[in-house]
Image (cartoon, rainbow, N blue to C red):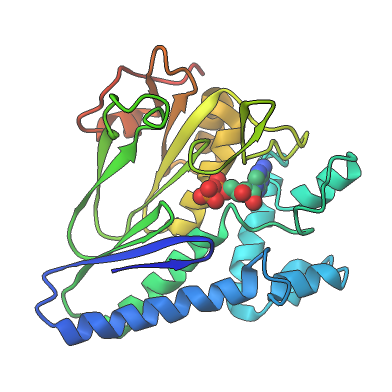
Length: 293
Ligand code: ADP
Ligand code: MG
């Protein structure tokens, strides 16, 4: 089942759904859950709660937001604090302060974390609806995946160089998710801006407002306790920090998260992975190295 929402494509896959009616009911719940998050957190829709708070000059975001989306604001602000603003939801204000804003960003930007948050909300709904019954579901919201219920899911890490060279494999590694785990990818290949014929990543260094270069993609796996929201937020954070500072950051703050970076070097493709990520990777198409720490 695939449908467009939150500026991307959502997908929901079920295994062993002998009960078609049950699956249909879960689908409706997941759909409604995403739409609700979109209505509250969209930076593009001027009617969203986020846009209205932004227009009203809000500063105490977490308290002002509707109770069920507060965790998303709180997590974004916490990641900013922990990463020394490498991750920065106030990037719009930052750009404006630097004279770089083009009115393109709302004052507060949850684009790097809201999709993962929506996946966690939907997963909670599904778990509640299923009670203790057996089920196995994979939620995917624009590259933010979460395995819900029992069972394992094999997921592929997309080859970021495929757009430049179609002879390259589509997938550059396989990661198997177990129930409750999430995986998120941030890349410079799906969304980017072009300037003077050069591709600029849509991820900015939240400290300087500059486009981040040097990294083609980052993939993060998180356990159930962290959830899809942190996988999403961390993939953006680690894209900015790069492998060395990024691995040190994880070790200090999020020791249960696994991460890999693909340097933006199509001439010698390689994967830089934290040790537990390297251990997880199957069928890696390229050499796997550890971050220098
Ligand atoms: P995608 O939305 O393509 O899945 P990400 O999850 O990495 O990718 O989110 C990128 C989005 O996050 C950007 O489009 C922008 O809205 C926002 N953003 C860009 N740079 C930062 C940053 N340093 N900190 C927080 N948000 C950012
Ligand atoms: Mg992200």
